[in-house]
Image 1 (cartoon, rainbow, N blue to C red):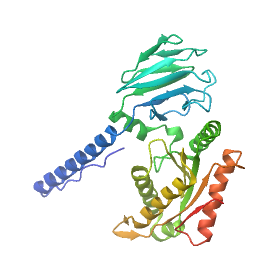
Image 2 (image 1 turned 30 degrees about the horizontal axis):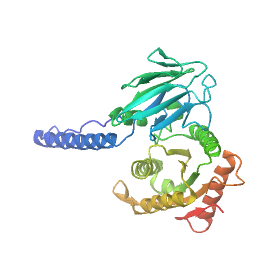
Image 3 (image 1 turned 90 degrees about the vertical axis):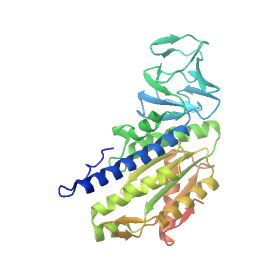
Image 4 (image 1 turned 120 degrees about the vertical axis):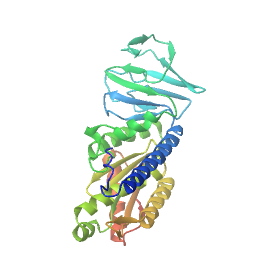
Length: 317
């Protein structure tokens, strides 16, 4: 993030000092919030080399497997990785990595972990499995947030800094396969902004960009779990992938987002803009046999929300 230059007033040095102090205080408050948020984060692995680069896998369970199998807790799309390659086990505040007899081996900082052997991971250890490299970060590290914000330019929407459509489709395919293999819940939210063209036509495209950035920050920081995948589908359309979430929980989240957007003060050049959103909800259920079918079901529900009056949540039937 590039910080704007501190404004100065040449004619009044005391005003200049006051403005600088305010900016510094604001930076300190932001840092405090980021540090607190970091403390709440689980340990994680970040893909440094491989697909999707920059993706974070949070270690939310006491024992998690890594492999290319969709049923693995951490699935890495790399054909040189065994279907069940390695295991991560929490031991208090530490994490142990064990090779599960993988074909091409597991390496930590270029040192091979023999089949059946294990190693306690330390901060910034580099784990090589197949042709992919993952970086380990312990729980509570501020760098976890940095990587989450940085992501990969190839998978990031340049305006809103959330995932783009290309990454969404990759993630949708992987999460769909995982949910099918594990027989777990999986839901999708598909939503857009009501009468967004009117905002652009009335206030200009810069106002429209402001709304898109503001709404993504509102949702990303206030309503999503670290493992939820939030992406800009195109224009004013957005998609959220919710692993291990059934239709009821997804609908409740959608309603929380809808009401938060309606209540939020979108202020552009001193004017409050009226912004609302319509949301379609769909869950993986019998009859949905592909990721595309699930996404279309959510899109169809969104269309119903739009045609039935907007500013509402509709679940796929």
